[in-house]
Length: 206
Image 1: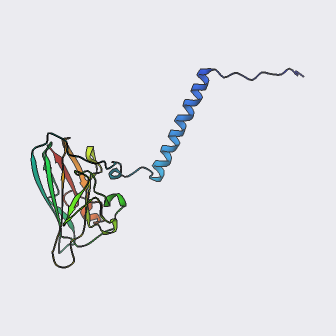
Image 2 (image 1 turned 90 degrees about the vertical axis):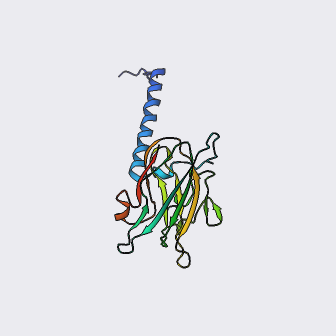
């Protein structure tokens, strides 16, 4: 029997670097698989961090956009009017959204937050606010792709008596041109949410 002590193989620097690299890549792959399986990635509209959108210098042009939310009395289907629209780039755009729907729907907390407007606020009645109770949101206007992903306006319901609509206003500017998708993140029903032109549509910056 050979009783001589055998020496352990020595690791060279390239071998150590190879082991570290393989371990790191394997860890990333496992984490990615877990996130994909469990849906751990944040929804598109939650990825943008709502930083203070202060007004940049050099923007002097002003434009106005009016959107309305209605409910078809015969079908019960909600819809934005218009659903597809265009705004100019490098321009202060003053939005008005008038909601005629008095129903409300609980949305995820991020959809109760105003995001992407100047100062990340909107005016609702006589109040300037940065958020609406997620349990009392009627509809949202949420951009879901492109450079404006995460832009979100929570729209409260119309009063059940008295005035027949609720109005929110806000100011925003868009410098990147293109056509992007928006949608309502409230539960408006498959019929109106599944087709552009009702509770989703195209938002174009020229």
